[in-house]
Image (tube, rainbow, N blue to C red):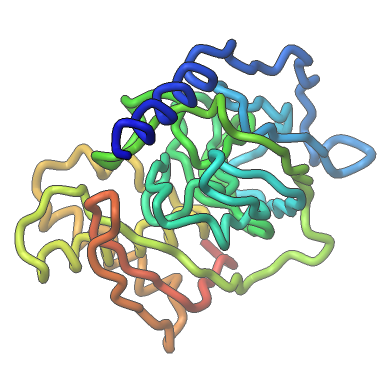
Amino acid sequence: MHFKYLKLFFIVFLVTGCSSATKYYEKQTPSDILQSEQKEVNVRVLAEATEWLNSGAIVKAGQQYRIEAAGKWHGGLICGWTGPDGIGASQVCVCHIVPGWSISTLIARINDDGVPFAVGSDYTFVAVQDGILQFHINDPSSSSSSVGTFCWPYTKDNQGFVTAKISIPQIKQDIIDVKIIGYDNGIKTSKQEDYLEALLNAKRQAIERAGIEVKSMSKVKNFKLEEDYIETYAKSILLPGFEVIDIGYGEGGTYNVMLIGKIKTAGL
């Protein structure tokens, strides 16, 4: 009986693992949304694409943007169809690029070297740097970007697509609702230390979403200095009353917390 399932798994591996990679052959013309007449850019993000989609949308540091997405896709045959928020994907699909979010979540980054962040179906943020917005499903195309012992890092067996619209809000939001999943580095120490590291990561994401870049602080060896730096800014942008939900250790081995609240973006 076990041999039959192993044989079936091997056949599926041959069908999906040996197929040709899907790439984007149509290149998007770079467009600064601030200067364009339409004030928006629309793109289609393919679930099976191995490369990141260059949307052509040029974002400017300090400017507020909104990403709205819709459609259906899945991150593998057994993962199930979901929207761009990834809600409903099977928990057995533990592959991810951005920890804490399901395999079918729409993610983005600014430029090739930008830090990926979860987008989902509706996301408002302030760009921390100039560059071109890129999109991908939260399913790694190679093992180097995957977290999780049982991850099968291929997008070749994915199906579907979502459309994403990048625009500038007609009315600038000084207060943004956030639901951020923070995560530690995946190296288990103590539960308390891993929790604090995940919470610090959530606050770092909140700061960057408000438009303050703290990516360079990840190179600081002195953890206390980094902690003080982030906490100082977090106090100025996180409004009182935010909630932290302790999720605990996930399937990929990272410790996760969810920060729910509001952040202030005006005057930063």
